[in-house]
Length: 218
Image 1 (cartoon, rainbow, N blue to C red):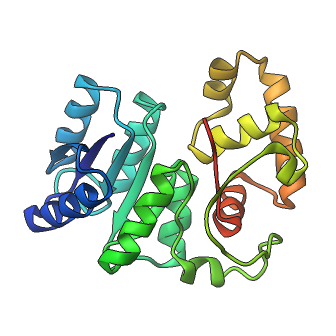
Image 2 (spheres, helix red, strand yellow; image 1 turned 180 degrees about the vertical axis):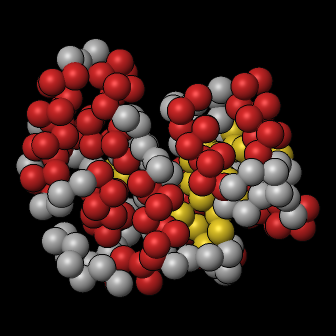
Image 3 (cartoon, helix red, strand yellow; image 1 turned 45 degrees about the horizontal axis):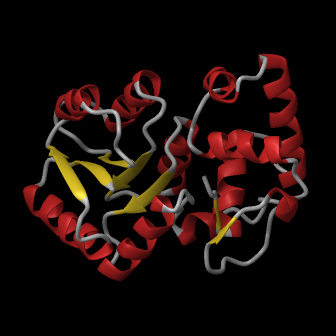
């Protein structure tokens, strides 16, 4: 496992490193203290399993950095770390392609559980944010993460592939390339996925996946 931590606070990076080493003693961890450092690391190595990106960095707004990473390195799953966990901040992060959102105020136990989920290709959203959205149609209670099968949601295998890539924050263009599908076919699959989850956009789809506690096998 190889993880990029992007945070300008040395103490927080050290604490996160300790948590990650508890998850996997052999985990390879690369650290960056700025957005530019993150860009340089991503340019040097593209095989990170996950990027943990602080939203409050000194050299660039975190959302801008997120957009750059998603544009230039769409294969890198990015999870946001932030001292703020209000609904608007979380939703903007998801809109910009983040795969999850972990509050920096989380206890070490919550942090470890969240990291386990995102490393299993699931989506971690603060429960308070999910609970603040009673209008989200998918209302199943959160339980232990499980690997999704297409039959679990009534999706075809290809639609499940499309949903997995949507959760990873990938655009239709990238999904077309990764799955070898025409753009019109991908749009059809996206429409079917949204209809099945009873949502109207990608962000709501990610929230629904988080609420269901689903992960995606490779």
